[in-house]
Amino acid sequence: MKDLLGLMGKAKEMQAKFQAMQEELTQVEASGQSGGGLVTVTLTGKGEMKSISIDPSLVKPDEAEILEDLIVAAHNDAKAKVEAIMQEKTRELTAGLPIPPGMKLPF
Image 1: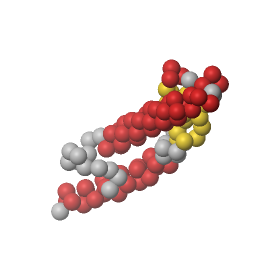
Image 2: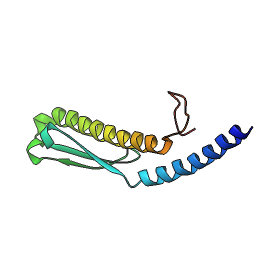
Image 3: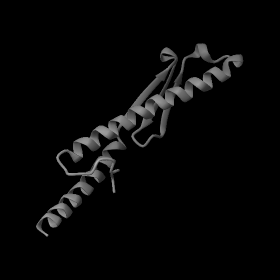
Image 4: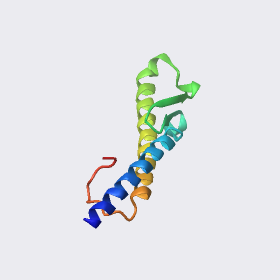
């Protein structure tokens, strides 16, 4: 019973830390690039696209499809970076807790 109460206390503490981490993530930004830096996309910690920068040399009518592909690639690069930051923060937050492998957090 004592272990259960201790675990419940840790779960409450972890929940508060997750809320703080989620608030912190709203301030996080990550930029991804494609085409050797010709296209850059910046995402928020929630994965929302904040800005996009396209090199003027790419803006040609007959290259629209290439530009679209580069934008998608830059967005995916930035999103992967945001997810890596979130995973690292989660790892730091749960360090030392007896959480079963594969368990997804937050609850």
